[in-house]
Image (cartoon, rainbow, N blue to C red; front, side, top):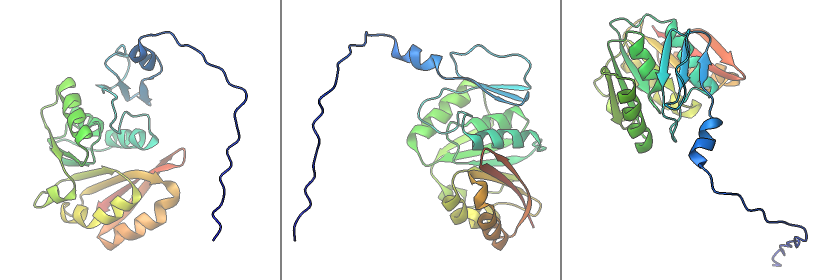
Length: 223
């Protein structure tokens, strides 16, 4: 068998440019913009000025965890929380990332939030962000669905991805009472039919879907 020969063309034109040393962190901060969810929520970093005219303002240190609000699914989930009655409710924020959705839920009056994540960096970042926002009703945990055994919630919010959601529908179902709310996001609106079909197998009723730039959030209730 004759092995293929990889041909690499020589580079004839190139140039070197010396970049002066500078405060790279400050440069990065200048390009990191706050996030606004309608006039309801402003998500800022510690180096931003606190904006005025919003119902809630959350400070998030944008390290390597998912959930700064810039992604469409975090934006959708944030807005959805404003439409729920969270008073005296227990909530699960599955795959909490930076902890932003759990933090918003506490600010909106939830009784308690259990917020696990399988990523160590997210676990630590979420703890830091909860402290920054003076939260006291959020339990950050390191782990996944195995931590939900024996736990019950009024509301489950899972902003993850389609395959993980499908795998965990049975766990969510066993953790919600009849009439409990399940909000899922982290997928494209074209995934709607598959997710609704799978959710219905586990006792969930489709209520509505919200979309933003091709991404989606689905609202279910437990039958």
